[in-house]
Length: 149
Image (cartoon, rainbow, N blue to C red; front, side, top):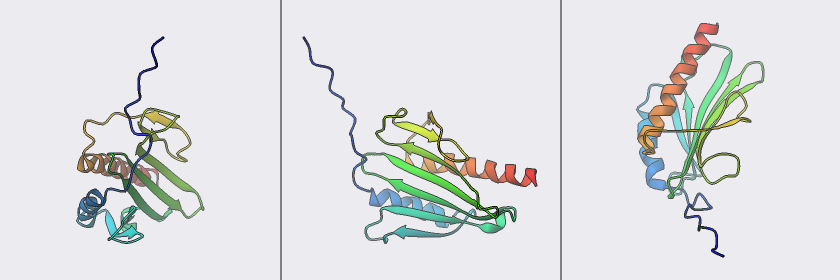
């Protein structure tokens, strides 16, 4: 009897990819959608890149919006978009690539609560291409918010 084929995919996301986080931060600071950026815990050993989004781009019902980005040396990532509303509700979604048991490695956590997931296909996994995909989705979300006002 032959053993099952070996799974070649990493079972862990690996360590944070500092260079990719710094690259993405350079793009965030030049984006008119982004008001400010910050690294957690700091820019020397970043694990998370946070982009606080420009409040003036949103209707008054949205009190804050942000983008939380994690990128790993394995090419795995998590890009989490979060809106805070004056009603106290959160509207969020997340683009992910990581080992998991609920979907394919590359998947999307659906808004408004990220509870539901769907498999995701992207033309490229290059960090700037993923960032572009996310920014396009955020711009569409902002248009939807304004049209609902």
